[in-house]
Length: 70
Image (cartoon, rainbow, N blue to C red; front, side):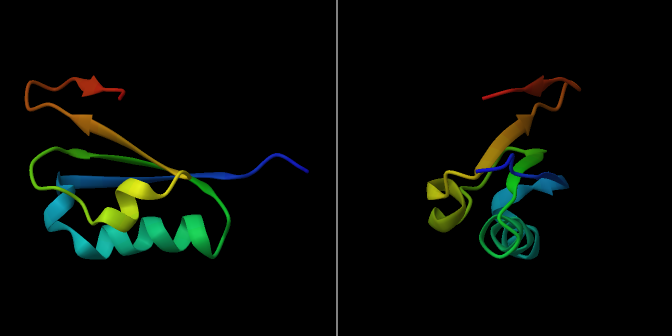
């Protein structure tokens, strides 16, 4: 099996309050078979489909300007 491609979705806000961006990430993971990194501010809980998808990795930014690579 070949190496999977990768995409990054950047959300300049609360990911849980960004259903369109969550949908984009799910589409990239499911339909395009990509590994997806989401970089966003924390806050509201994202949809369970986003959280449970093993191809989606969420990286939350903190307001002080740093990024938490969780």
